[in-house]
Length: 553
RNA sequence: GCGCCCGUAGCUCAGCGGAUAGAGCAGCUGCCUUCUAAGCAGUUGGUCGCAGGUUCGAAUCCUGCCGGGCGCGCCA
Image (tube, rainbow, N blue to C red; front, side):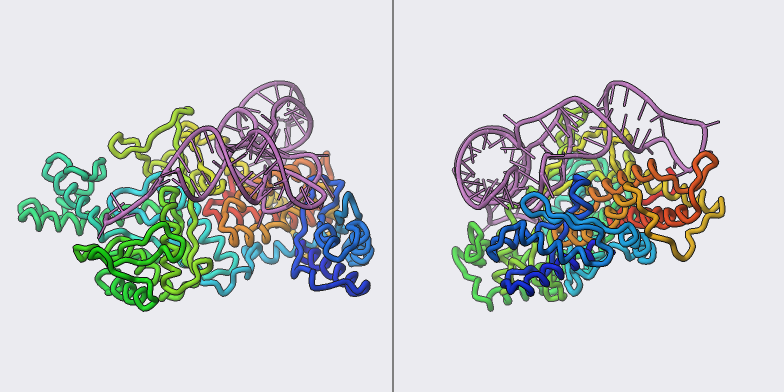
């Protein structure tokens, strides 16, 4: 019996009570969720359904709870139902019913944890979207880790996801980048407002290596060469870094193509049709104030140039026309001022800003070194690139430590700590559980122990086995909730709990027999199912975070 | 000034109205001649920023205040 089955049974029991007593069934929820009480005395699972419904049907909570308990206790697999406190229902399962979960997990394998919760939703997930004028750095890294994990989690919940990286390649920053490259190649000082850093000289040198004659060209032609090749080389470097980090983008979308393809004009026409465009002071405006924005936004400047905002609008409309129901933007806290205007774009385009667009703001990552704040500055050379981070701590530790906390809270990373590559990172705690299982299973195979085709689930009756089974049973709900709330950190926290639960099981329950600690053959077999189920959930969960599940450590 | 986010153990952080507020790390005390001790058991450590309110019940929801981060261009 899975938690979902049990929750369904609770609801069925409540319905029966309502029906028998002629209570108003319109107050019944469509589904109920069970809680995992921290205190074992409160049962394996607990329901607050009676507390929630009692007042609405005019019954004392404890009386309603007692009636439901009476009904529920007849459900096969349910060992006991107790009414506690103001009207909690505390449930216990028969070990045999609980132990069945190990079979379900093992048989589902990689599919365990997947669901159809978000089936039918087409999601465009845009993140990182770094300017192609410099390497991917720490400021982008949080969203790279969280965004890619979210991509995997949404897909696991059944959504159809496209991950997308927007390339700001149309603005003046590309020109500044090109002039910076040109200056570096000539050995001249970086222009005012130019880009500095070793990578500028490196890219410039690569362009010169490809085109030795470039510096002989007229300056405008030479800068054009640096712009085109420098941009391509930078993009390749960004792509390589992200790939190394395990981050995949289905689409790299060029801002420039919005202008060249006519998408911007198309978007302006669309917004005009919707009646939210007007002219004033020689410029063309979008009346975003009609939808909660602080002020209207300029689409076309007095000098005739379209704004970045116009490109944003065109990009959004383009996404929608590509068939995405939900356009999700993952932005840094320094962009939170854009939330209302982006939502207003959707509204002005005739969409539902509460459904078709979703903007998630992630707080910034602060860096400290031995507790002292480190300011990220390109000029001071204190920018840390993604590649440097990977070199220092590896992909797994970096991804995990960035994905394990809510993006609502600012995250402080201590360079000393993360480069120490020590136990400070809980990823090892989780990975170790997986490696330990892998080792045990190797040993079992060597000794000739086989999981077989079946086992007696009633043998998994040790308290630690029950804890482990219940924790394994939570995984599908955790994944579905993480997907719905767009909170990958829930998966990481769950894995930490699972790893701890497994370690405690391992400590208390011998799986393979030893001379001094014999284990009945049937119990070994049942425990091998449970151990394999644990391995599967750890591996599936780590995979959702883009973190490896090592066989050995 | 206005807006968004945050404030929970020594540190980094969980806890989308439920029972005695948790994890990892750090500290202390125990536990390996055979399934990985990167582990387990025990222990130390908390005015959940402050003050009101809402209700059977508030770290969680509402209001105000205090503290911190970030943002408020016909820039990109």
